Amino acid sequence: MTKIIVDIWRTSLHREEIGFKKTEEYRAKSRKFTADMDLFGKVKIDKKDYGYIGYRKKLWETDKLENKILDVRLFDDTMNWLGTIEENLLKSVLLTIVNEETSLSFAVTLRDTRIMFPIESVRARFLSGNLFSFPYISDKGEIQGLILKSKKISIGGDWEIIDALTNKKIAKVDGKVLDIGGRWEIDANKIKDENLRKILILFAATLRFYDDLKERTEKLVEKVKKEKKWFKLNKTMMSLFYNPKVRR
Image (cartoon, rainbow, N blue to C red):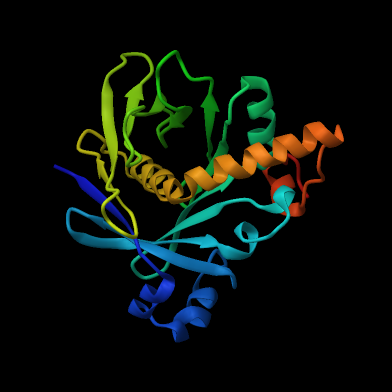
C-alpha cells in the first residue's frame, strides 16, 4: 500500500533540519528555490524521505489583496525542484463571481512534463462539499478526468479523488487536525503514475492555506464589485495566460 505523508511543520524553525546556511546552495542548485522560498513541511512516501515543500513568502504575505497569491513548490530530498502549484488569482475571482460562491483556480507545472494541469473549483452540488475539476494527461497521452471532492462534514480537510467517468474513488487525502502543524495522509495505492502523485502532494500542501485563500478571494471580489473595475496583473500572474506556442 502506497501512503504519502505531507507533514506541515508547526513553525519555520524546522528549517534547521536542512540548515539556514544551505539557502544559497539551494538557490544555486535550482532557480525554483527563490530568495523568498520558505520551507514549511516534509514529504514521506511509505515512511521513506521523499522531499520538502515550500512557498513564495513574498507573494503570499503582501498586504495588497490583488497581489496576494499562493505559489507552493515541491523539492526532492536533495532540493531538486519537482513541481509547483500556483494560484491563478484572476480566474479565482471570476469563478467566484460566476459560481456565486467562493471558488479557487490553480495551475500545476512539473519538472518532467511540458503539460500544465489546471485544478479549478466548480459549483458544488446540493449538500456536497467543495469540488474541483482536474483533467490529467499522462506522458503517454492517456486522459483521466478527475474530481477532487471534500467531505462536507469533515473538519480536517478530507478529500476524495474520483474518476469522473466511473465515479470510482482512486485516492483520498485525510487531514489530521489534532497535529498542531498539520498533516495530510494520501492513500495513493491505486495510482501508479509518479506525476499524478506529485500533483496530489502539491494539492495537499495548499490545504494549509485553504481557509485563508477563500477569505482573501471573498474580500477581493467585494473590492472589485465595489470599485467596478478589475485589478492589474503583475508579471507573475500574467505568465499564466501566455500562449506557449508564441516565441518571446
